[in-house]
Image 1 (cartoon, rainbow, N blue to C red):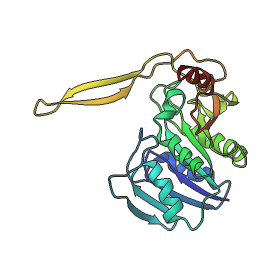
Image 2 (cartoon, one colour):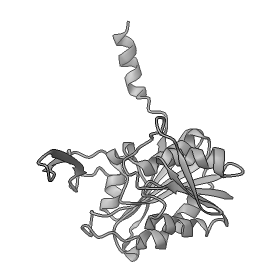
Image 3 (cartoon, one colour):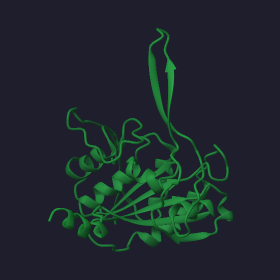
Length: 252
């Protein structure tokens, strides 16, 4: 099995090394094509107004000056001799659940894989639920090979991808693995912080307050809150089927 690994935290990210080690328990045909610099929050964006720079780190390891989606396209169309059989994205520094999914560059790697008809899995290591600001990849390291191995040959059909999140607890505290739905936060935790530079000119930082929502059972939010590994099947088709009749009626 030929595996492509990418991420949004950059070519030097610790989580990328963790994922590469997990991938090598499945195959020895591993390729790494990741952003030159961190691209968190890049979502499914393409670099259409800037040139793409490609740097060869070693025979099967490349850095791309561009977005996570750029990395997948460069890997498939320029770097690799043949399409990968599986794309793994991550391991992201922090969870990608609920509303995060639409912003996530980690999930976007798997989305682009799905666009290209390739089986794709996004993997993230949560923190902030139980252990405050402490981030450890130990739970992903301990359980990742088993869980990803179980999912690697799963056929979900066109336009599908998997989003896997590991809880921020000790490996022996993991309650199990749950197939989950994408959750929805019940609070707006987005914030803008205004600051001043040395010339008294204003600038701004976007950020998120780490607030726990009232998680609905069976969602990715609920799973991480209760120390389960969350596996969420996602689909590229965003059509709200339930709303079609209402839209049709409004147009007639």
